[in-house]
Length: 358
Image (cartoon, rainbow, N blue to C red):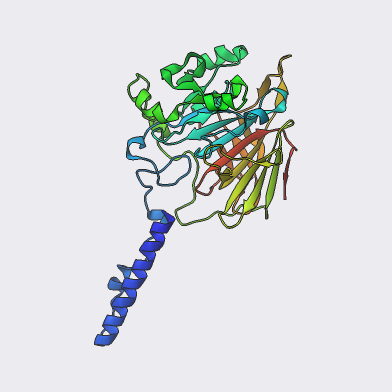
Protein backbone atom coordinates (compact mmCIF):
# COMPACT_ATOMS: atom_id res chain seq x y z
CA UNK A 1 0.00 0.00 0.00
CA UNK A 2 2.87 2.36 0.81
CA UNK A 3 4.27 1.83 -2.69
CA UNK A 4 0.86 2.53 -4.20
CA UNK A 5 0.65 5.83 -2.36
CA UNK A 6 4.11 6.82 -3.53
CA UNK A 7 3.14 6.02 -7.11
CA UNK A 8 -0.01 8.14 -6.76
CA UNK A 9 2.06 11.00 -5.32
CA UNK A 10 4.56 10.77 -8.17
CA UNK A 11 1.81 10.82 -10.80
CA UNK A 12 0.16 13.79 -9.10
CA UNK A 13 3.43 15.71 -9.05
CA UNK A 14 4.11 14.91 -12.70
CA UNK A 15 0.64 16.00 -13.72
CA UNK A 16 0.95 19.17 -11.69
CA UNK A 17 4.31 19.95 -13.28
CA UNK A 18 2.98 19.33 -16.80
CA UNK A 19 -0.07 21.49 -16.17
CA UNK A 20 2.06 24.28 -14.77
CA UNK A 21 4.43 24.22 -17.76
CA UNK A 22 1.55 24.16 -20.24
CA UNK A 23 -0.06 27.23 -18.68
CA UNK A 24 3.24 29.09 -18.37
CA UNK A 25 3.77 28.53 -22.10
CA UNK A 26 0.36 30.03 -22.77
CA UNK A 27 0.97 32.91 -20.41
CA UNK A 28 -2.04 32.00 -18.28
CA UNK A 29 -2.48 31.45 -14.55
CA UNK A 30 -3.44 28.16 -12.92
CA UNK A 31 -6.43 28.59 -10.65
CA UNK A 32 -6.36 27.43 -7.03
CA UNK A 33 -9.21 25.07 -7.87
CA UNK A 34 -7.19 23.43 -10.65
CA UNK A 35 -4.16 23.00 -8.39
CA UNK A 36 -6.31 21.45 -5.66
CA UNK A 37 -7.26 18.63 -8.02
CA UNK A 38 -3.69 17.40 -7.87
CA UNK A 39 -2.97 17.84 -4.19
CA UNK A 40 -1.97 14.74 -2.20
CA UNK A 41 -4.95 13.46 -0.20
CA UNK A 42 -4.84 13.45 3.57
CA UNK A 43 -3.61 9.97 4.48
CA UNK A 44 -5.94 9.90 7.46
CA UNK A 45 -8.89 10.23 5.11
CA UNK A 46 -7.90 7.18 3.04
CA UNK A 47 -10.31 4.37 4.01
CA UNK A 48 -8.94 1.01 5.06
CA UNK A 49 -9.03 -1.35 2.07
CA UNK A 50 -11.59 -4.14 2.09
CA UNK A 51 -8.82 -6.73 2.00
CA UNK A 52 -6.94 -5.34 4.99
CA UNK A 53 -5.20 -8.01 7.02
CA UNK A 54 -6.61 -7.41 10.51
CA UNK A 55 -3.43 -8.71 12.18
CA UNK A 56 -0.82 -6.78 10.19
CA UNK A 57 -2.69 -3.85 8.66
CA UNK A 58 -1.42 -4.82 5.20
CA UNK A 59 -3.79 -5.06 2.23
CA UNK A 60 -3.05 -8.70 1.40
CA UNK A 61 -6.10 -10.81 2.28
CA UNK A 62 -7.54 -13.00 -0.44
CA UNK A 63 -11.05 -11.98 -1.46
CA UNK A 64 -12.45 -15.16 0.06
CA UNK A 65 -10.85 -14.38 3.44
CA UNK A 66 -12.35 -10.90 3.83
CA UNK A 67 -14.47 -10.86 6.98
CA UNK A 68 -13.37 -14.39 7.91
CA UNK A 69 -11.77 -15.75 11.07
CA UNK A 70 -8.03 -16.18 11.60
CA UNK A 71 -6.35 -19.47 12.52
CA UNK A 72 -4.12 -19.99 15.57
CA UNK A 73 -1.84 -23.05 15.67
CA UNK A 74 0.15 -24.47 18.59
CA UNK A 75 3.79 -25.12 17.66
CA UNK A 76 6.45 -27.00 19.58
CA UNK A 77 9.48 -24.87 20.41
CA UNK A 78 12.03 -27.17 22.05
CA UNK A 79 15.47 -27.68 20.50
CA UNK A 80 14.82 -31.31 19.37
CA UNK A 81 11.78 -30.10 17.36
CA UNK A 82 13.70 -27.47 15.37
CA UNK A 83 13.45 -26.26 12.76
CA UNK A 84 9.69 -25.93 12.66
CA UNK A 85 8.07 -25.17 9.35
CA UNK A 86 5.15 -23.01 8.26
CA UNK A 87 5.90 -20.38 10.90
CA UNK A 88 7.58 -17.76 8.71
CA UNK A 89 4.19 -17.10 7.04
CA UNK A 90 2.46 -16.34 10.36
CA UNK A 91 1.16 -12.80 10.85
CA UNK A 92 1.58 -12.89 14.63
CA UNK A 93 3.61 -15.28 16.78
CA UNK A 94 2.97 -15.59 20.50
CA UNK A 95 5.61 -17.13 22.77
CA UNK A 96 4.78 -18.16 26.35
CA UNK A 97 6.48 -20.38 28.94
CA UNK A 98 5.32 -23.92 29.70
CA UNK A 99 6.69 -26.66 31.97
CA UNK A 100 10.36 -26.30 32.89
CA UNK A 101 10.36 -22.72 31.58
CA UNK A 102 10.63 -23.96 28.03
CA UNK A 103 8.33 -22.15 25.62
CA UNK A 104 5.62 -22.99 23.13
CA UNK A 105 4.56 -20.86 20.18
CA UNK A 106 1.12 -20.00 18.90
CA UNK A 107 1.31 -18.94 15.25
CA UNK A 108 -1.67 -16.91 14.00
CA UNK A 109 -2.68 -16.48 10.35
CA UNK A 110 -5.23 -13.86 9.28
CA UNK A 111 -6.09 -15.48 5.93
CA UNK A 112 -7.64 -18.90 6.49
CA UNK A 113 -7.20 -19.74 2.79
CA UNK A 114 -3.41 -19.24 2.93
CA UNK A 115 -2.45 -21.28 5.99
CA UNK A 116 0.61 -23.42 5.18
CA UNK A 117 1.36 -26.92 6.41
CA UNK A 118 2.80 -26.50 9.91
CA UNK A 119 5.07 -28.71 12.02
CA UNK A 120 5.58 -29.61 14.80
CA UNK A 121 2.10 -29.13 16.27
CA UNK A 122 1.81 -29.62 20.03
CA UNK A 123 -0.68 -29.66 22.86
CA UNK A 124 -2.81 -26.98 24.44
CA UNK A 125 -2.16 -25.04 27.62
CA UNK A 126 -5.15 -23.08 28.91
CA UNK A 127 -3.81 -19.57 28.33
CA UNK A 128 -3.32 -20.06 24.58
CA UNK A 129 -6.99 -20.64 23.62
CA UNK A 130 -7.96 -17.78 25.96
CA UNK A 131 -5.75 -15.44 23.93
CA UNK A 132 -6.83 -16.95 20.59
CA UNK A 133 -10.52 -16.57 21.42
CA UNK A 134 -9.95 -12.85 21.91
CA UNK A 135 -9.08 -12.69 18.20
CA UNK A 136 -12.08 -14.91 17.31
CA UNK A 137 -9.60 -17.40 15.88
CA UNK A 138 -9.94 -21.08 15.11
CA UNK A 139 -7.65 -22.91 17.54
CA UNK A 140 -5.47 -25.80 16.33
CA UNK A 141 -3.55 -28.12 18.68
CA UNK A 142 -2.53 -31.74 19.24
CA UNK A 143 -3.81 -32.89 22.62
CA UNK A 144 -4.40 -30.97 25.83
CA UNK A 145 -3.22 -30.64 29.41
CA UNK A 146 -6.05 -32.62 31.04
CA UNK A 147 -5.90 -30.51 34.22
CA UNK A 148 -7.44 -27.63 32.24
CA UNK A 149 -9.63 -29.56 29.80
CA UNK A 150 -12.82 -28.49 31.58
CA UNK A 151 -11.81 -24.81 31.43
CA UNK A 152 -11.05 -25.00 27.71
CA UNK A 153 -14.35 -26.78 27.08
CA UNK A 154 -16.11 -24.05 29.05
CA UNK A 155 -14.80 -21.17 26.93
CA UNK A 156 -15.90 -23.08 23.81
CA UNK A 157 -13.21 -22.25 21.29
CA UNK A 158 -13.78 -23.65 17.82
CA UNK A 159 -10.84 -26.00 17.86
CA UNK A 160 -9.24 -28.70 15.77
CA UNK A 161 -7.35 -31.40 17.71
CA UNK A 162 -4.70 -33.58 16.11
CA UNK A 163 -5.22 -36.23 18.76
CA UNK A 164 -8.55 -37.10 17.14
CA UNK A 165 -7.42 -35.97 13.66
CA UNK A 166 -10.31 -33.50 13.43
CA UNK A 167 -11.27 -32.89 9.82
CA UNK A 168 -8.55 -35.26 8.64
CA UNK A 169 -6.21 -32.30 8.92
CA UNK A 170 -3.33 -33.90 10.78
CA UNK A 171 -0.57 -36.37 10.04
CA UNK A 172 2.98 -37.47 10.80
CA UNK A 173 5.84 -36.09 8.74
CA UNK A 174 7.56 -39.26 7.52
CA UNK A 175 10.65 -37.37 6.35
CA UNK A 176 11.22 -35.99 9.83
CA UNK A 177 10.62 -39.41 11.33
CA UNK A 178 13.20 -40.93 8.97
CA UNK A 179 15.61 -38.14 9.88
CA UNK A 180 15.50 -39.24 13.52
CA UNK A 181 12.98 -36.86 15.06
CA UNK A 182 11.03 -38.27 18.03
CA UNK A 183 7.39 -39.05 17.28
CA UNK A 184 6.11 -36.05 19.27
CA UNK A 185 8.10 -33.72 17.01
CA UNK A 186 6.62 -35.03 13.75
CA UNK A 187 2.95 -34.06 14.06
CA UNK A 188 1.88 -31.60 11.39
CA UNK A 189 -1.24 -29.65 10.50
CA UNK A 190 -2.38 -29.76 6.88
CA UNK A 191 -3.03 -26.03 6.76
CA UNK A 192 -3.28 -25.98 2.96
CA UNK A 193 -6.45 -28.07 3.25
CA UNK A 194 -8.00 -26.13 6.12
CA UNK A 195 -10.17 -23.76 4.07
CA UNK A 196 -11.88 -26.55 2.13
CA UNK A 197 -12.52 -28.53 5.32
CA UNK A 198 -13.88 -25.66 7.39
CA UNK A 199 -16.01 -24.33 4.51
CA UNK A 200 -17.79 -27.67 4.34
CA UNK A 201 -18.22 -27.92 8.12
CA UNK A 202 -20.86 -26.49 10.42
CA UNK A 203 -18.33 -24.15 12.05
CA UNK A 204 -18.85 -20.41 11.85
CA UNK A 205 -16.33 -19.03 9.35
CA UNK A 206 -17.26 -15.33 9.44
CA UNK A 207 -15.84 -13.04 12.09
CA UNK A 208 -18.14 -11.74 14.78
CA UNK A 209 -19.26 -8.19 14.04
CA UNK A 210 -17.20 -6.93 16.99
CA UNK A 211 -14.05 -8.43 15.47
CA UNK A 212 -14.29 -7.10 11.93
CA UNK A 213 -12.05 -4.12 12.61
CA UNK A 214 -8.26 -4.25 12.91
CA UNK A 215 -6.96 -6.16 15.91
CA UNK A 216 -4.50 -3.38 16.75
CA UNK A 217 -4.39 0.42 16.50
CA UNK A 218 -2.33 0.72 13.34
CA UNK A 219 -0.66 3.93 12.22
CA UNK A 220 -2.05 5.65 9.13
CA UNK A 221 -0.83 4.44 5.76
CA UNK A 222 2.47 6.07 4.91
CA UNK A 223 3.22 6.80 8.58
CA UNK A 224 5.98 5.05 10.53
CA UNK A 225 5.81 5.12 14.31
CA UNK A 226 8.98 5.48 16.37
CA UNK A 227 8.64 4.36 20.02
CA UNK A 228 9.49 7.17 22.38
CA UNK A 229 11.89 5.53 24.83
CA UNK A 230 15.12 5.62 22.84
CA UNK A 231 17.09 3.44 20.47
CA UNK A 232 16.84 -0.34 20.60
CA UNK A 233 19.16 -2.47 18.46
CA UNK A 234 18.73 -5.69 20.43
CA UNK A 235 16.15 -7.10 22.81
CA UNK A 236 16.72 -10.27 24.83
CA UNK A 237 13.73 -12.07 26.35
CA UNK A 238 14.65 -14.67 28.99
CA UNK A 239 12.00 -17.25 29.82
CA UNK A 240 14.22 -19.52 31.90
CA UNK A 241 15.23 -22.55 29.84
CA UNK A 242 14.76 -20.62 26.61
CA UNK A 243 16.01 -17.23 25.45
CA UNK A 244 14.72 -15.29 22.44
CA UNK A 245 16.83 -12.46 21.05
CA UNK A 246 15.83 -9.85 18.49
CA UNK A 247 18.36 -7.92 16.43
CA UNK A 248 17.38 -4.82 14.46
CA UNK A 249 17.94 -4.88 10.72
CA UNK A 250 17.83 -1.27 9.53
CA UNK A 251 17.70 -2.29 5.87
CA UNK A 252 14.38 -4.16 6.28
CA UNK A 253 13.25 -2.22 9.36
CA UNK A 254 12.51 -5.50 11.13
CA UNK A 255 13.80 -7.43 14.13
CA UNK A 256 15.37 -10.82 13.35
CA UNK A 257 14.70 -13.56 15.88
CA UNK A 258 17.27 -15.93 17.35
CA UNK A 259 16.65 -18.68 19.89
CA UNK A 260 19.26 -19.87 22.37
CA UNK A 261 22.01 -18.27 20.33
CA UNK A 262 20.97 -19.59 16.91
CA UNK A 263 18.96 -18.00 14.11
CA UNK A 264 15.31 -19.01 14.39
CA UNK A 265 14.47 -20.17 10.87
CA UNK A 266 11.62 -21.84 9.05
CA UNK A 267 12.64 -25.35 8.03
CA UNK A 268 11.00 -25.19 4.61
CA UNK A 269 11.58 -21.62 3.48
CA UNK A 270 14.94 -21.11 5.22
CA UNK A 271 13.77 -17.65 6.29
CA UNK A 272 14.82 -16.25 9.63
CA UNK A 273 11.77 -15.07 11.56
CA UNK A 274 11.44 -11.29 11.21
CA UNK A 275 9.00 -8.88 12.83
CA UNK A 276 8.09 -5.23 12.40
CA UNK A 277 6.75 -5.13 15.96
CA UNK A 278 8.05 -6.86 19.08
CA UNK A 279 5.98 -6.81 22.27
CA UNK A 280 7.23 -8.08 25.60
CA UNK A 281 4.45 -8.39 28.18
CA UNK A 282 5.49 -8.86 31.79
CA UNK A 283 3.10 -10.86 33.94
CA UNK A 284 2.80 -13.14 36.97
CA UNK A 285 3.77 -16.76 36.30
CA UNK A 286 3.95 -19.61 38.80
CA UNK A 287 4.10 -23.41 38.95
CA UNK A 288 0.73 -24.97 39.79
CA UNK A 289 1.43 -28.71 40.08
CA UNK A 290 4.23 -31.32 40.39
CA UNK A 291 4.34 -31.73 36.61
CA UNK A 292 5.33 -28.08 36.28
CA UNK A 293 2.24 -26.74 34.50
CA UNK A 294 1.97 -22.97 34.80
CA UNK A 295 -0.47 -20.49 36.19
CA UNK A 296 -0.04 -17.52 33.89
CA UNK A 297 -1.94 -14.25 34.11
CA UNK A 298 -2.88 -13.74 30.45
CA UNK A 299 -5.38 -10.98 31.29
CA UNK A 300 -2.99 -8.45 32.71
CA UNK A 301 -4.49 -5.14 33.80
CA UNK A 302 -4.25 -1.44 33.12
CA UNK A 303 -1.05 -1.40 35.19
CA UNK A 304 0.62 -4.48 33.65
CA UNK A 305 3.97 -3.46 32.21
CA UNK A 306 5.81 -4.31 29.03
CA UNK A 307 7.82 -3.03 26.08
CA UNK A 308 6.97 -2.05 22.52
CA UNK A 309 9.94 -2.35 20.15
CA UNK A 310 9.81 -1.21 16.52
CA UNK A 311 11.66 0.94 13.97
CA UNK A 312 14.91 0.74 15.93
CA UNK A 313 13.42 2.10 19.15
CA UNK A 314 11.62 1.01 22.32
CA UNK A 315 9.16 2.37 24.84
CA UNK A 316 7.51 1.14 28.01
CA UNK A 317 3.84 0.22 27.69
CA UNK A 318 0.84 -1.11 29.57
CA UNK A 319 -1.36 -3.99 28.39
CA UNK A 320 -4.53 -5.92 29.22
CA UNK A 321 -7.11 -8.37 27.88
CA UNK A 322 -10.36 -8.02 29.79
CA UNK A 323 -11.64 -11.56 29.16
CA UNK A 324 -11.59 -14.42 26.67
CA UNK A 325 -13.81 -12.52 24.25
CA UNK A 326 -11.76 -9.31 24.27
CA UNK A 327 -8.87 -8.23 22.10
CA UNK A 328 -5.45 -7.90 23.66
CA UNK A 329 -4.86 -4.16 24.03
CA UNK A 330 -1.70 -2.07 24.32
CA UNK A 331 -1.42 1.39 25.91
CA UNK A 332 1.26 3.99 26.44
CA UNK A 333 2.14 4.92 30.00
CA UNK A 334 -0.48 7.69 30.04
CA UNK A 335 -3.24 5.16 29.31
CA UNK A 336 -3.78 6.08 25.64
CA UNK A 337 -4.19 3.14 23.26
CA UNK A 338 -0.87 2.51 21.54
CA UNK A 339 -0.48 3.25 17.85
CA UNK A 340 1.76 0.66 16.19
CA UNK A 341 3.40 0.08 12.83
CA UNK A 342 1.81 -2.06 10.14
CA UNK A 343 3.53 -5.41 9.80
CA UNK A 344 4.09 -8.74 11.48
CA UNK A 345 4.22 -8.89 15.27
CA UNK A 346 5.87 -11.06 17.91
CA UNK A 347 4.27 -11.09 21.36
CA UNK A 348 5.97 -12.62 24.42
CA UNK A 349 4.43 -13.15 27.85
CA UNK A 350 7.21 -13.55 30.39
CA UNK A 351 8.51 -12.88 33.87
CA UNK A 352 9.05 -9.31 35.06
CA UNK A 353 12.63 -8.07 35.00
CA UNK A 354 13.90 -10.77 32.63
CA UNK A 355 14.14 -8.67 29.47
CA UNK A 356 17.10 -6.57 28.34
CA UNK A 357 16.79 -3.86 25.68
CA UNK A 358 19.88 -2.16 24.29
